[in-house]
Image (cartoon, helix red, strand yellow):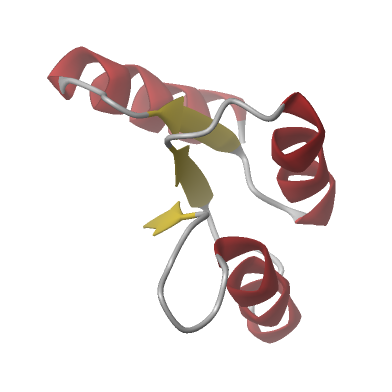
Length: 73
């Protein structure tokens, strides 16, 4: 399982997600974002992310997302 930020300094999270899914289509990826852009989030889900967490987040957000990923997928 991987937590992946959408905004990163050298390569954006969506580009990284695409590469990860090419290497391992079964990867369990949870996206993290400070910008609530539903279109961007939907695109990440279409590519293969299983969930997302909005910043700022807390431990309950993390636990909920992890539970969802492992219960549903």
